[in-house]
Image 1: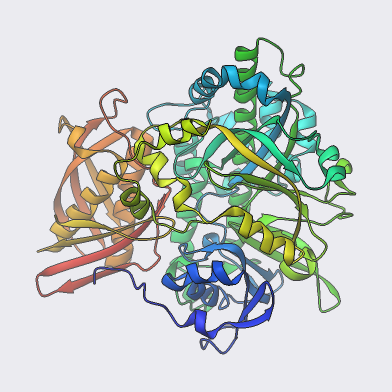
Image 2: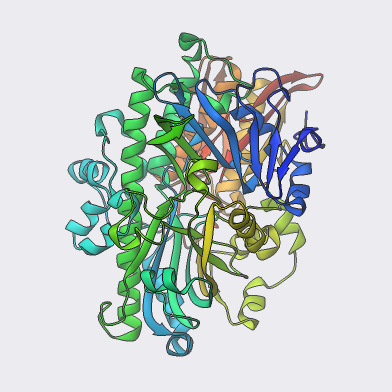
Length: 492
Length: 137
């Protein structure tokens, strides 16, 4: 045994080019695929896929009963477990399945963007102090509990009402909810579908960032591409300071996924489902297990929104402490909050028929175009904000849902840059280098628990997010609004 | 070393070996414990009982490692080593040695979201047993 299979799989050679940004993995690639695969990607990014299993995973997802259209992948596709990261799959509600692994362990992992009325010149002199405050007020987790401890009653409220629970506790205001996907609360969450273990894992984790690729960054607007959309978001122009953070449902969501993968993988025979990878375990959407999973998943989604709401509160407090002014005076309004690990029941056009689908987005952001009825009033004409972090040394993007997203990707786009190096490889590459000092030389103040957390997340470990975003723009999935560059970085 | 880490783009892979199934499970657990917290900084001051059960040996190793991750995250117990007392293909009973996490002394590593079934393998080898597991971090 030993190493994982990493030789070129043949999948890259089997791809058929459809247009400049679209490649198809034919349905005949492996027996058992129900639909073809479709990958939105450029030629150079495609080369990164030759060494890993991501395209095989696109083929595996095509085995899911009830899958409609294509097993899709966004340009930040990389090797995950079960689904590829960057994978999107829609299944018919009537006869399709839901796969907990197709949502992932970090249920409702997502990104939130907050603007300020401060400029880079205002913040630069106090940047170190600000980053230190944020690092302390937004703890990473293990060994440093959050500020809130959930009791049984509170926990049920968090599960049912999400970000609203946090706002009711004083961690934010109603306007924050208006600019959060689903207003920060998914209907159909049932705490009785959640066991004891997720509750215990989540009890001390509201208001915590977690580790891995989760982060909080103070950023400056670098360039604006779409002035009208930027104005609608309160983005005023280059030099404006904003805050972006990325995290999810912490141990609470991880444990829900774990519990349901275990449960469902043990009953596949009951529904006569056979799959090429155990981690894809799935159950019919209309089965008791499928329904229970979705109810529990929505509890975790709500937990994640409560978590990001509490982090927003801690962020505002940190700015208030450093700049000695109330957050409203600092113009700290939320721009948007998007989820990129979720299964949602949505109505889409399938062969001319409005059809209820369960859209799995595993490391893919919802990207609804202008005019979509689910968008908040203020973004109705520009489209849904799509927040796409890059890496801590380069830049991130703010986009909006594009004209072809509904037709091509069930209203989905990329969620980040995508890794190109494993964590171990990144640490080897960067051995002996003082990453923090290198970032500081470029004006970026970084705080992390240790050298390894910075090395694993270094620029070298990631694709260039600009290339990834350009593919999505070319495919009509998003339009660019602004580019942001990091000034201060907090890593778990 | 009875365990080593594998290259996986987003996550961490672990292979472990053991002359017996009990040794295999102890090695895999030490590999996971070392990801969670630098085991050199952990003293064997306390012991905790750990049991896991599952329908077959592959799902058992996932259940076993998941249990260790859960105890680390919820009980804040950092492990140094493991003593497997009883093992079959469907059940494991063991003692974990270590101590409560003290952020001042312990070097905490990655937070492991979960142990996955992706490319999971447990098999007999000429020298005993080997396993491959991928964890999500």
